[in-house]
Length: 198
Image (cartoon, rainbow, N blue to C red; front, side, top):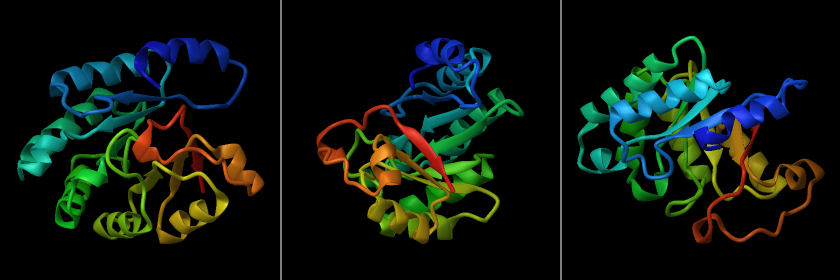
C-alpha cells in the first residue's frame, strides 16, 4: 500500500499478527533515490515491516547498473534492521540479460527479495521469469512472483519455479482452488495485494 495508509493499517491491525508492506517509488521507480529512502523510512516509522521498492527501470534499460546499486542500497540502509526490502524489477520491460543482472545487483545491494512486477506495467509474473530470477540470485534472498496470479494452478507453477512468495489480489480464490475471474494484470492495476509466503 502507499505510505499514507500505513498508520491507518497499523491501527486497524493492532490486535493481529498481520504485517504491513508499503510501496516505495511506486509504480514507475522514477523517484529520486533520496526520496525513495525517505519514503521507506517514513513508512517504517509509521509501522511498515516490509518495503516493496520499484527499481529505476530507465537506468537498467540504459545499462546503468551503478544507479540501481545506489538506489537499492540507499533504501536498504534507510530501513536497516527494521524492515525487509523487496526490489520490483517490472520484468515486462526487460530482456533476460537485464533481468538477471538487475537481480544480481539488487542482491549485492542488500535486498531481501527480488520481485517480478507491480501489476501496473507490461505483463505480470511468468514461470520463465521466476526460473530466471531464482537462478540469478543465491538462496540467501527470496523471489516474489507478482502480477496476474489468480488461481491455484498458476500459483503452484510459480512456487515450483522457485518463488518463495506470491503477490496476488486473489488469495481467497487461490487457497479455495477457484479462479478469481479477474481481468489480466496488463489491462489493469492489481488490487490490494496479499503476500502469500511458502
